[in-house]
Length: 277
Length: 133
Image (cartoon, rainbow over all chains, first blue to last red; front, side):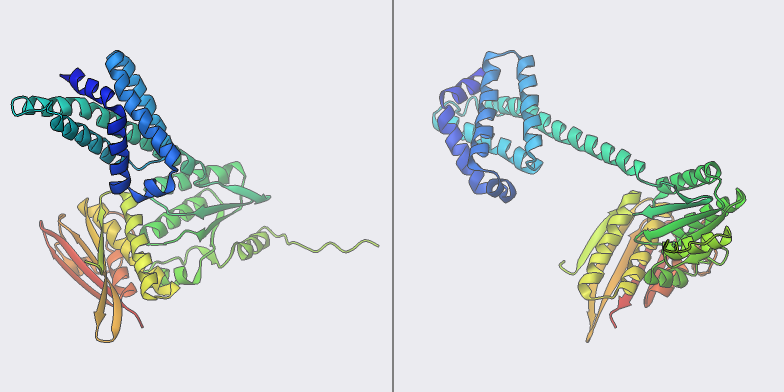
């Protein structure tokens, strides 16, 4: 039965193809139809039919590998998954309707044909969805790693003075990392003053404040002084509204002021070099 | 509904999604940066409470109009364990999770109106409103 469908596709390849393309352009996702050039669109769709036809001639294993190659290609083209599954659906519908029109599907074998169609279409759809989801999973895990790498660096700017710039949202995971890096770095760089710059933190709620306070306390325990810098005016207001007590920690408006204060604490200052004669 | 959009809170990143939504709506309504920060912080607190105590729930942001005034309303709802002593949680410094205990009283101060409704074992509904001045 399966081969009946496939043979039918092979015989009416061009006709099915044209109808398919037309229907896709009518119902398809605008993001794909308008952006992708006709040539890429046609050649990819044609390749798909070839893959299907190849399954008649080749073994199942070969078909699977060709199908996954093809799915990979589609994923790389960046077509939305919803569009691809819809395209597969339309393809199946067209073939079924045409077979019905040509009398290959009649009342007697209708149910069998429907089942066969299912058995034939489902693995293809599954393969596509799998390919997409595994690509996404890979991307997400890569991004997670990338994010972790730039999550909380501790930068020594002067002898005994280090800065930790924080950018972006702080969640529990990051808060842990911040604490670890902060303490390890403070000891390693023999810092006397550590500046935590929160200019790039969009929202300071009680949890973020709590983590920062804990970090500052811990820094004090290892014998350094901690300063919070980069508190924007609107953040200052929300901190006051929330009733968070930051009295134990020195705070400064900008990193610049923080560095100046840190130099003062370590009994140094920046002087302008006199022009030599 | 056009004026209301919701975010389901299931994991920690949904908190970010909720406050992003809130910030966009606040910007849209014409709130200044300070009020935007207040609103996003309030959403962050409420969403985090859902994540921490109830496990899951949802946060809805609604544009509301009353007479000539426009405002933003946050609706945080969950069907978690609920709160047995409402007076206690509204006190500064009370926390069951070792946090700062400034969350709910803080949200009340950040927003103009604040209504909390909770039944132990059934869940908690919080409605907080900020009016555009």
